[in-house]
Length: 488
Image (cartoon, rainbow, N blue to C red):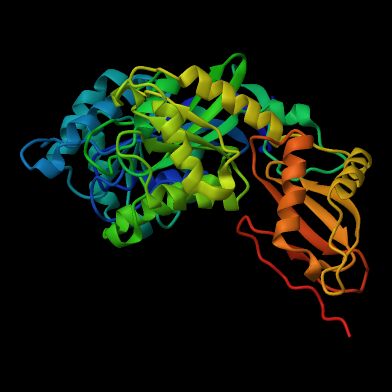
């Protein structure tokens, strides 16, 4: 079977990168992906949760997993309270591997290396050994001594510099079975044009990003949705560092969930690792269709929640306010209505965004959350043809004509839909500068109400209808605003 990198596949063989902390697992993970996905830092123990991605290596697709480091000493200092959870998660991940790549650092083995090698003997038939940090032949002589541990072969590589990575890729592929791999659907495309096929959008998973402050229950919800324990759950703030991906199905529809690090205020982010974690979390907005903004129902809404929602709004992503830990709230009449009213008041222009109370811990409300996400995704995919759109525009102009004053007068000529997911429209007018924010909001609200976009953000761009008569102006939603030309 010939594979295409632009196509998504299922039943991929699973390759797990394992080893003690700081041997270069995450660096090799990024090297094999040909992108920077896992956070790398000289600090040992940066990776905690297993980080999974589909990789396309030398013409073959596979599932690649980076794991947390195996540590021998895992108790004592409270700062190392997560080590047992990290090791437990790593050992669980090994069970589902078709191939385990044991990564050792060039030089003498540590006690942790030796303990891990002993543990991996049970997986001998699906084990491959790579000795990292051998750039330029450094310490290769020491590396060959590893054969005394019973390995048939060791591969000398440099994950950072790329030495012998091609040979390692060939060795990995030679040990995998691709006979069960089958096509799942097309890769994502945001732009809608005459060739857009909504069915192709339905063929790929709906991508959900879980965003919010630390300890709002993102990892608990991720594990609930995927019916797994892929994300480490702990009361320690900042447990999640990398983006943890998971796949699940709901009512015949595939979803991909992206569990992210908690986003704190900049003034509270002091470590490089957390800085990269937060940036990676924010970047998932670009990759997602819908953002689940996790809000602690007990603590209530914060300014940080508003900023996170603003980031998603600027990108035109669907947003669902998830009031988590609702089971801990007092069971009094109209409690949800009161919380929802406060959120509506504080979020201003995002009154369209659904608010769903849930308990990620016991699953209450999760069904409603997923049903809402499916309805929202369908709205993100809607494409309005130019004819029906302009027929609706004629009605809107009759209902509320543009101003007729000397300095405020303008004519709306026609409109087109620029894109779906994110949803954006262009209105061509005679004088872009004269179009007020109030009238732009009127057009946006009519689009949302009359054309089926009640749950999603809608961007409106005001553009000159004359070919050489000036520049366009885009409305809010975080986009650049370009003033119209001056008239004499």
